[in-house]
Image (cartoon, rainbow, N blue to C red; front, side):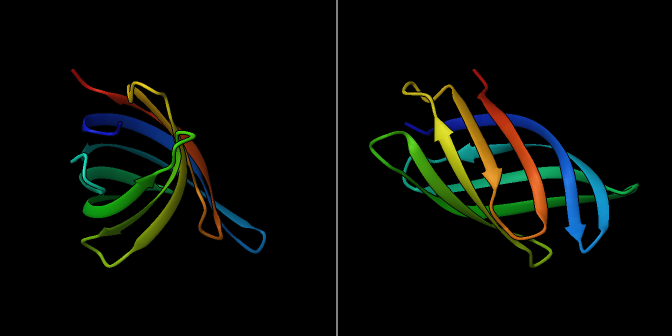
Length: 110
């Protein structure tokens, strides 16, 4: 269901106590169709720009929901719950790590 190149953009906040740091991110993922993925992104967190590459694993359930875990070249790990259309054209996800408030859509590139 998830296979190929996807492009995305998202924004949100990193929350720590009463502090909320805004961030925006754009990138692309390559789902290999076997439960692994690779990707790259440019992230702007409160005005500081970082470029990352990452690898990850994912599972898709029969109801088209799933989970993914990504590890980037800076040593960060992120977790996501997602929902994918039956044809795999669109993926919607939310980050599930404490302190992150963000959700986004990914679209398969043809």
